[in-house]
Length: 150
Picture 1 (cartoon, helix red, strand yellow):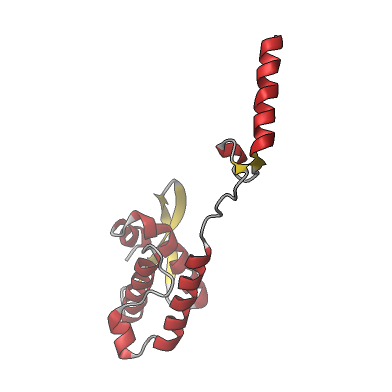
Picture 2 (tube, one colour):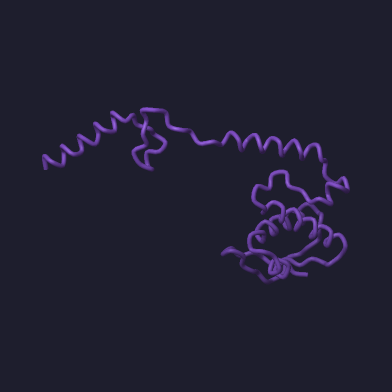
């Protein structure tokens, strides 16, 4: 089976990641493949086509890789697992629960800073640099005087 045929059946958002995983598996000896004369394009990049034999080893690797890529494309994928993997014991429940707890704590810390009295944000370009209201009023007055003088 050709890599280009496998990629054509996938969602576009996981194609490049699958190619990277495929090459890493081939490099690590998990799957056997060889290059052929053809090449194919994915998202504007050209890749040499590779051919692999359809067998149990490849089928298992392929299914597991697709499952993992599907999970990582979900929004907020930190710690997400398939229910059957958890119930069968493939995944350690305690460690994943701890990862999830840490991600919840991180989300709480991401609150936006509220302005304190006397501070104003002049424009979106200066959102990171806050200016006291008196200084902002003085700058506006100087700008008006400069226009009136012209």
